[in-house]
Structure formats: structure tokens, C-alpha cells
Length: 269
Image (cartoon, rainbow, N blue to C red; front, top):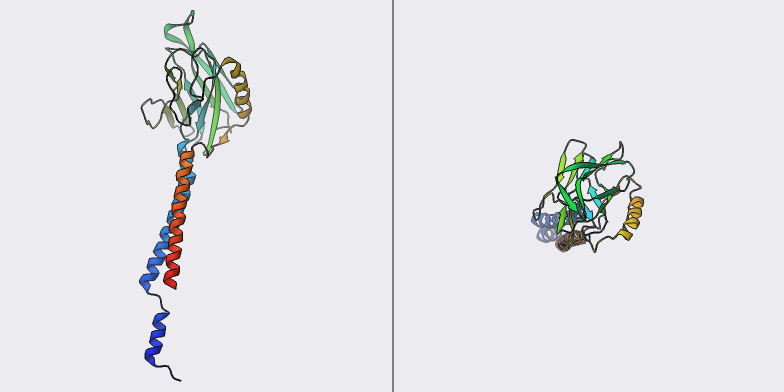
């Protein structure tokens, strides 16, 4: 039996997809792929960005105690390394005892200066005190991209005051100098703050309590062990919220991709 031309044309039309339909399904697929890619980038980048400040831990101490704090210094440059870090100490409420924990690959210096005016600490009048601690990397021990270094110091006696600002200065191999010294809210380069009588912020950097004399030695030993390597990788678990946001981006991207594939299959059918 011969097939009529009209019947042949009908069959051909039913098996041919419209160009507009192909473009729409391809567009949906591309949008889904782009969304899941953006979600993956957010999941990887958000935790690093959230933990990129120079901070101290713990950031709270009890007046009169000898507190061991750890200065955490991440490298924020993709092309330069961190070669030197300086932690400034207060002159109006000076610490009479400052000691540092040695870090492999780094030299440390306690810088003492004559105070602008003598300060009474306990029963003593202090005219000279350590005003800064300077850590300098030896060749090959600089903090590279994607790394952080930890520097621990014992400070005491902690003054009986609200809080103490501890500005930090970060020096890079390309000559860049970053001053972590701002005390404004939501500052781009906030200064580390040691809270004493004032309440510490309720974030993931807040300290659970103060260090006492009997805890200082144990903390110093632990810090020495942890600083045996010249640098450690930045932990992606520092900020749980950032990880949740990143996971949300991944889920949204996956949903968009599934919808694009589903639409393409329906158009094909």
C-alpha cells in the first residue's frame, strides 16, 4: 500500500522538535548547571572569608590573672606571603609580665619602652613595660595563601578594666601592610580585643571563660605542641553559618539542574 504525501508529512512533523523548545530546554539546563556551580563556589569560599580576620583566642580573661592567648593570623593574599606580625600592648594599663611561646621558623622579640607617664600597678609604679611583641618569619617559614599561623603569649597581670584593645599589624612580602586596629562596629579590619569586666561578644570568637595561673602552663604546653609546624591550613569549620549558606547554594543549584533535565525530557517526549 502506498503512503500518501500528506500522511508522510504528518509523521515527519511529529518526530521533529521545535527549535524554540530546544533552546528553552538547553537554557534551563544551563541555568541549573550555573546555579549548582555558584553554590559550590559559595560553599568553598564562604568559610574562608568568614575566618579571614586576625583574632585572639580566648578573647576574655579575669582581672588579676595571667592569661595565655593565641593570636591567629591568616594570610589574605593570593600572591604574597605574611613575613611579620606585630601585636601592640597597652601603655595606660601595661602588663608587667609578657612571655611568648616559641614558634618553629619564626623569631620573636619583646619590645620594651619607657611609658609616657608612670603607671601604678598593684603596689608598684611602672615606668617601663613591654609595648609590643614582634614575630618575624625565617626564610621559607612565611605564611602562604590558604594558611594561618598561631602565636601564643602569656599576659599578666590582667588589669582590672573593661577591656583591652590589642591592635595587630600584618606585613606582606610585597610591601603591603595591614593594620588590624579599628574598634568600630563591623569594621573591615577590626582590632583584637581582650574583654575583662565587659561582656565579650556572643560569637564564635568569644571566650568561654578566663585563664588562671594554674591553667596557663598547660595552655602554653599545648600551644607549643600545636606550633611545631610553621603554618596550618585554614579550617573550613570555623564558621558553621557560612557552611550552611554554602550547602543551601548547592541545594538550590541541584534543584535548578533537576528542573532543567526534567523539562528537557518532557519536551523530548
